[in-house]
Amino acid sequence: MTIIETGTYKLNKGTITLSYGTNEDVEYSINETDAGFNLIHDTTLIPLVYMEGTDGLTETEAFDGVYGIDNGPGFLFKKNGTLNVITTHECEIKKDTVSFGGATYNWEAKDGKIELSSNGTKVMTLVP
Image (tube, rainbow, N blue to C red; front, side, top):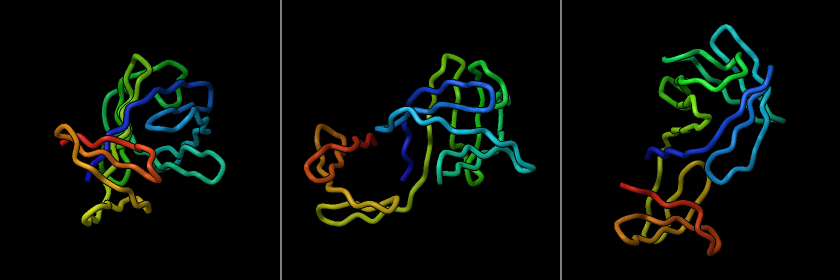
């Protein structure tokens, strides 16, 4: 299953602030490596490899560029400061639940879409 989350980003010298999905603003330090870049916040590490467009993570202005995670597109940065985060997950679907990314959600088909919830709170809507 592929999930595309939209959000925003803002670059500063040596850091990037990301907000996507249901997340609040999180500031990551940007560390360049031989393989690409690591975004680091507390114990979270996001390894990114430049793929196409502008290689702009070390700049301070928004840019159009794609960085991959695990040999696939992961972060699509747009010059207007918006961002698409694309992740692929193995999932297990049962009668009333779906499990992926280490979590289990209740699911319900509604208006041609699939709504996922946890403890009665809608978490996300999947669009085929």
